[in-house]
Length: 189
Ligand SMILES: [Zn+2]
Ligand SMILES: [Zn+2]
Image 1: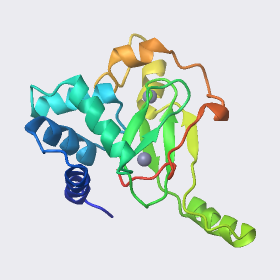
Image 2: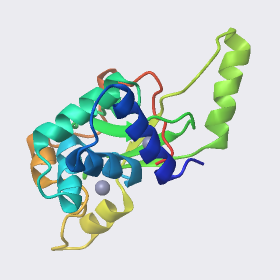
Image 3: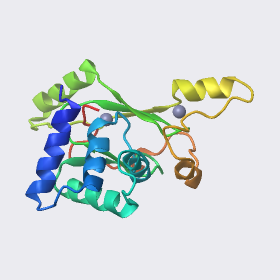
Image 4: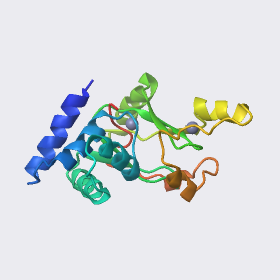
């Protein structure tokens, strides 16, 4: 299990090796990436980073994320029509639970799936490094909101309104719309 401190240090090293100075704004972005269990979009990273460092611009978030992605320190996820999400790269395989209503993404660790990873390697002769599995559905908060009349839609704290207003969820996205990084669905967060 990798700690958020270790993730943070790894990101700092990656930026440093690429020749980037660690400004307070970049530092705020790295803290958010290392510490949040959400799989945040650029907009969400920006929102969280500004709580640490008010002057963090959207451009700084965008560029920092882009550089870290190029360096292989961040993984980019995309599910359905949702905004791209970013998580610190790790080698711990896990699946994702994706809420088609509020677009929350949570990790789902599964010994069975890890077993399948090994089985796939054993049967195919591939050196299998990762799997990319997502379960789509409605998170507990969304189910509760749907059940209660006049209930507030959940996730306001998690996903900025404008991001899911852009493309309303329409059931289960086609698998073809998924795009994984080199190590699909892997982070400790
Ligand atoms: Zn939800
Ligand atoms: Zn994850």
